[in-house]
Length: 383
Image (tube, rainbow, N blue to C red; front, side):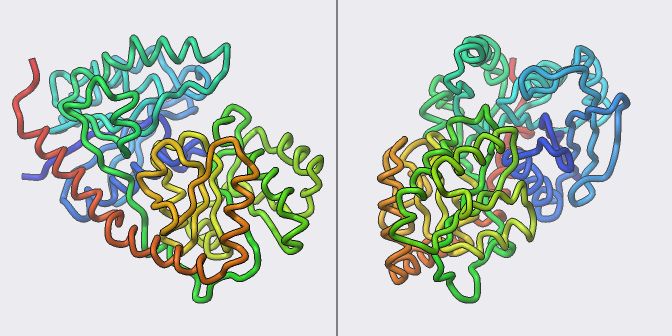
């Protein structure tokens, strides 16, 4: 008998707001269908006024429920509880997989399952960003609402020990770590290593994502400019902070060496990695860092902040260099070490590629998730 899972995610491609968590779900859905024989339905939101049903990855069915408004970046509709109950009854899945912590859809779905077992994948750490207006609201959500979503779950899954031992600490006993995988076929090393001093950043350029600390990387490049005249920085990612970052690059005197490519995906993103000599991530608290694994799969040495879930991925001195947070000079020094010592950079790139090929290929991660879903579906409903 075919096993079935209903997956909820607030946004889903081709929605332009889809990001790393959504691409994780795409890869998971494809693997569950193709490699493990699951019947998969995806429930997400749409800004259109009418419900939509379409074929998704690997033939999965995608249901898009109209949103009425957004709170910050969270889509919301007052009719979702009723619509989700009806849809779950119609699909009748063996297990419901809720992808969170973006408030709204997943929280509502967790109380609309009709007693069916749920597995939550928690994709981030705390959503608090140091904003005096939004952080109290986020604190209230994480303290009062989120536990109501996590408590009924048969299993909670996250990508790193940073998340399990941090925001999920009180649920640690039923939390498993399954890191995101990486497509080691699409993301592969260039035929010859790039020798020009080309730095790559991939991530959000939204003004609200201050924890990404992109200005620190711009400052690091300004420090290095005199020593590495051919230095260039490729910034991949979209967001409303782009005008301010262009202005900052101009003030720092590096505007001519910074290229803002906007958001890239698929083969264009993979090529951006292959066109670089080193990958840099100044972010304070990546919960895992899918972009780090993509860089490693592409044979790039990694320079990243020693924080969040990144140390779970990067072995300092072996496949990358970890630096203190909020320290452009330390980041500049690490980039200098890699860019001026091609043999060291090449060795780090090869070590990273070998690691992710063995430990983080998608087939291993999807197999682990399939086993967790099957285990949850095979147990009696919680009281």
